[in-house]
Length: 467
Image (cartoon, rainbow, N blue to C red; front, side, top):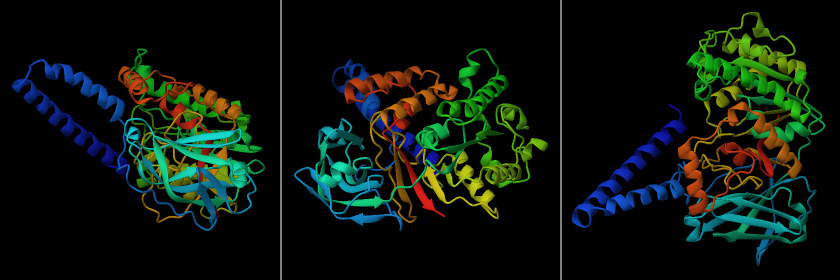
């Protein structure tokens, strides 16, 4: 069982115990006072839970985040005075700027999401934190170099405030547009969620998707299909998405590749590299049907076996063909999804011994261990750094700025992804409605799925290493 599954299991157990204690208290209250009082309070208790306590937050908001940014980054002198922030050294304008500050929630910030407003001239941003936040957090000032340099960047909290003097960390910008970029996506839509802005602006991009993502096809079963048929249809659709959607950003079909391995089976393949790992739901042990849209053959096409050795052979062939200078892939520690962990491991293993080596790694996290709402806040907002409490490994931050037009194009790309199209279950829609009216949260204008809120942002955020 993964760490995230353990945290979720503990969270649900504690929630059930808490709800049971409340129920016993209400029953006792009704027995000793008015019998109808529990009937009145129970729906109010449930509504309060959905509005304020339904988030999966597996740490205390008072815990300090911890980061070590490594040799690529350096600390610069900065002064916060009367709400205005000024840096004490010259800036080029393309740096990644991270402000380390202690953020403390006010009493309203325990009911409404606290956020920090960053405003300088015509430039503005806001970044949201946990309710009840009271610890060290990392704001992302990327794109605000001009007012920061001029000393006109206003920093103010809503339902929270900044305490003491902050620290500013500067990481030089990295050239992405004029270099060959390869995005590794464990599933169709991972490339768009994490890096649409990066790959849409690069002169030469490759998008490589490892799995067909065929499982959890209940939406298609509702159309009258059996489990196997539904899984195969979903896999075909997501295989098509992985080839077709990057065309929206100008990536040629010949540089979009679907490897067709099976969802959530990469760990099994890694554990037994010679043994095929068949699909859990599609009754398939051959990856070739999901490769029908590829423009050229790959090594595993010879037998179609879903094995780790075949996956490595495919990746090596693609790396030698594309010769990417920048590799974009899941972060090995922050992203807990099993397929994401194995995707990163497979790429690093495939690189061993190759004559061509990339120069830059950019790692992303589309999922987190500790907080399912990150990035917090609304569509269009900036992205503050995610929760991390162990700074053993040093990674340089890398934030890529997306203008409004690119954000909209990214939202349309996500809307084309079949996995993000089905309506939310009624319970989640009701929760959204309660959170909107009781907790002040806004839905994304681009779609119901939570990824429209989380991914269509002012920044795309990565962790960078130079090789």
